[in-house]
Length: 366
Image (tube, rainbow, N blue to C red; front, side):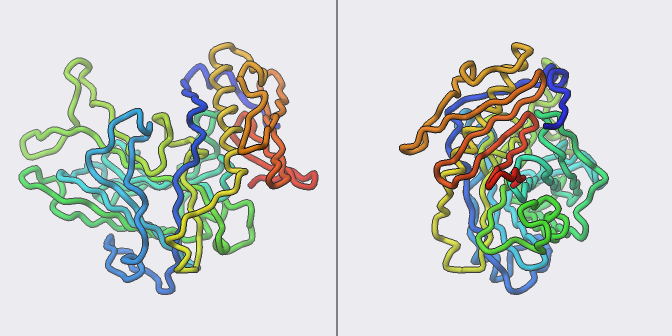
């Protein structure tokens, strides 16, 4: 197992944990387009018109917070060259301030894409854009809660994006309708994280990736002819932003890849509208990540690693099967594993939030 500066990090960040968070994330079947799309911020092509929308975004904490007051939803498509996204963000006041690419875009209202191709919870990608079309793309080594960092010098080579404002931008004198975002990400950048098929040029039929989307929305005020963030008079600081997402995270933290949605790629047009049936092992993974989050929380509070008994995780049940995890730990590191009666694989998660499986005695990243 990797060495890990465990306790120093947990002095800096808090965690929330609940076994109620074991419901499976959102799902989406991503259809194929035989004609390349023009990235212009519009969904005028026939392929876009036939692509289904995701469910409307919800608050990042799920039902704990009120539903968003502006609708946001996304469509996806793919071909042998690109992974395509189209987002629609209802907004009566479209505004933005950041004009330099690679700025911290979420300091404006923005739209964000998160992609974990192999679903292992590490080595994933993020893209952010504001209504001015200013972009930021980055690679995350592992989640921040596990001591991860981002690589800002990494770029999605060949990425195209376009924004269309339905109304005006930075003009408080009128009421706008929405802004839309279209993105095309070439496969070579993304396949770096697809350890299941490192030599594949694009996803195979019915392959599943983990994705999520976020919309950051700041409270605003009109200052003369300009928009500004609304500030709390008690603190003199901007009010906290709203975080609206496709698949809820159950905490104000987008970097919990186990809660991201499932996106399945298919060329079968008739397959798009049928519900996605996920393997029972996905529930096993959710239990493992629940134990992982509980271990992080316990360690922060008690300055040591818990036993499975202390985590109330000595066993759990999926359908009629009772599963008994095994914990291996040192002073700073841990690994929790459990055998699946459904697939025969043994699943592992460690202190970095890295998910792996063992089949025929070979541990593999996903």
